[in-house]
Amino acid sequence: MEEFPTNTNTKQTENLDEPPNSRLFVVTSRSITEDELRESFSVYGDIHGVWVVKDKQTKESKGIAYVKFAKSSQACLAMEEMHGRVLMEGTKPVKVFIAQSRSSTRHRDVEDEELTRIFVMIPKSFSEEDLKDTFKEYGDIEYCVIIKNKSTGESKGLGYVRYYKPSQAAIAIENCDKTYRAILAEPRTKAPVTEDYSGGMSRGDYSGGGGGSDSSNQYAFPMADPGNYPAMDYRSSVDFTRCLMMSTRAALSQEQVFALFDLIPGMEYCELQRDAYGMNKGHALIRYANLGSSFYAREKLNGFEYPPGNRLSVNFVDDGEDRNSPVGRMAVQFVTTQMMSPPWNGPSSSQSMKPNFPISPMLRIQTDVNLPPLKKLAPPDSKAKERLFVVFSPSPLPPDVLEDVFCRYGSLIEVHLVPGRKVGYMKYSEKQCADDAMAALHGQVINGVKMKVMLADPPREESHKRPRNF
Image 1 (cartoon, rainbow, N blue to C red):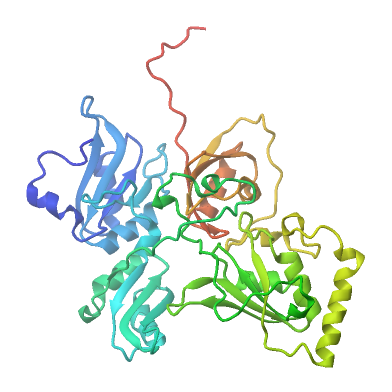
Image 2 (cartoon, helix red, strand yellow; image 1 turned 135 degrees about the vertical axis):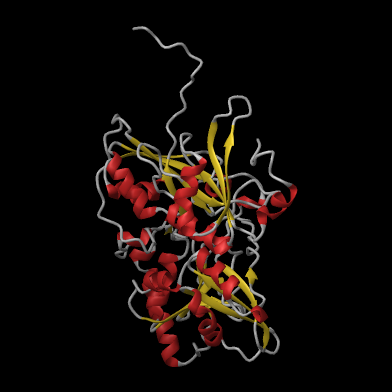
């Protein structure tokens, strides 16, 4: 497939990826022309070229185009503003992505997450506040991290700044003082999943399959090492403590962990553990005011799936208290008595347990999106008037969670996940409901999974078949 016209000279071709990430890949209607694309995208910056990919035999548009901007920030802004828009009346919304480099060996275009984090060289005297104050003029900052020597704790003169939008990161790289040598940071190494925690599904089903590194869950952690907090066997009464260590493979936030463990009365302390770079280590330390609360939390939340598909591991850790004192022995005896009582003599397997304390329905769905109330599904035999195509990163959400989320906009018929891939379809009986869901959920994160929500292409018709006459 020819991406660019044959009369493009060598110098122009070499400059197609300069500056990096300045070229857009656009999926649009076949009726859209180069002039119409240029007119629509030119409001975001200087355009160096527009190419519509055409069939070699028929010379007709394939519905794919490339738009080259003078600056990366202009291309990123155009992507953010134009994705999902309708260029001409009667045409489908365009899909806009940053095109991969022509020298790249990858088979996918650049993800938004790869465009928002920059790496900078800074004075060793800089604090994180200094770093944030320096770069906040270019856009809203999600976080700043200064890289420090693990032994001395001193700054290495290097740092990361994460913005909320790719255009903000690009503007920072283009406009900040050149002494910072700002560049886009390399994507974080994705940790391989080594244990099935998907609650019934195979790991391949949950992660989207594929078998390559791209199918690894970038939000997953290796099972956390509690470090200086030795785990204990809860079956031994002398090992009951007020402190718990929770381990998770999913990227839970401090607020999510706090909300879950705060359901049990008596929580005094909850902190998500982070490494020297401020990254989530995959475990949290929780302390309760009494042994009864900590034992109850451990018994009910160890093995609990939160979010669905991610099984938590909760164990006692040493809190440094003397259990041999009279008060300590009385507390242990009290908890042991409670454990031997009828309510505790049921199944002890954590997999068969379900917490019997009240859990808010929204704990099942963790997101910043203001979701409307649940609505009934449309009848299964309803005619689908619109389909949404959803891309999941790093892996698909369970079908019941997707149904829970997408049904809230009304007239949802069914959810379909494509086996072995990180994509799915949502069928609606009303076009407006599908449009509302796409507008609200595109680019949003649900339970640690980012979703790209687009209108699905209509099913292809086989043009070689002769039309029937009846």
